[in-house]
Length: 286
Ligand code: NAD
Image 1 (cartoon, rainbow, N blue to C red):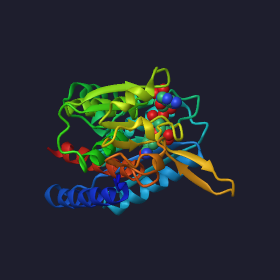
Image 2: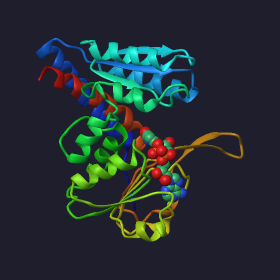
Image 3: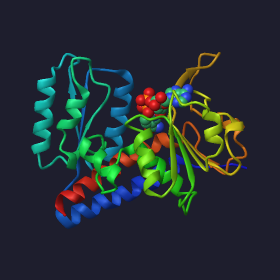
Image 4: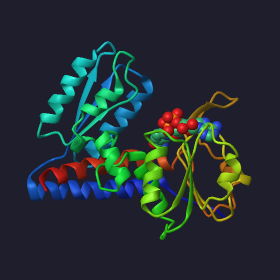
């Protein structure tokens, strides 16, 4: 029987730890970590994510500062806002909600964030630190994947890990984190040949493709651990909306453990964002 890795429970536990760290920072240094969230335009999905981030930030005792900019905002105006947030000592984390409108170069914006406040871990300095194993802020979803894996794996040494998807926000950083743990990592993507056979050799499978039910039961080695990052919104025949992962969950009863969708990786992402913000605030005074 596959053990279900409960992302909601783990996210609650991590947020409780963050709340304790925030309270301790207040007592020791008199500071309240501040997270600035910048949203440009009114993309409905982004609005839902931002609302959730704001609510959770406040719940753990941190300050949430929201900047909602008009969809026509120019790049120079956004860069000026980032510069002001970089200079503000009351702000410890800066998050720019993606996607940005087409007139703005997202790469340039992310490069402008002070790496010490880059709680999404997307700045090239933090990417470089991750790939050289020298600290830095780690992207939230990959960090959440590792915390989920840690609940079922004690010793990663020599395990074969296959990552499906090579995006900068999930696939590549999760591969770096698995390498750091001494796994033998294979990163696969849309152009990979013989994907099923590659996955069949894996002790750990992390899927972040955005392709519903891509990973079938006969791809999974008995006893493997499966982390499903994929989220696709689908409408049932009766018109109900539901979230679907990248793994055919009903076919992987022979896996040792797996994350469900929803309730697996998703809840961990915001919990890791808060944890990163508390860490950035702590580093700012140490
Ligand atoms: P992306 O589109 O940037 O990258 C997808 C990657 O998967 C690419 O490297 C592509 O080559 C690969 N891929 C796509 N289809 C494939 C296939 N059929 N076979 C093999 N490889 C394939 O996406 P992303 O931003 O990395 O997100 C991936 C998925 O994870 C999406 O469903 C997204 O919604 C989800 N996601 C979830 C969270 C969370 O908090 N749970 C966070 C980020 C992303």
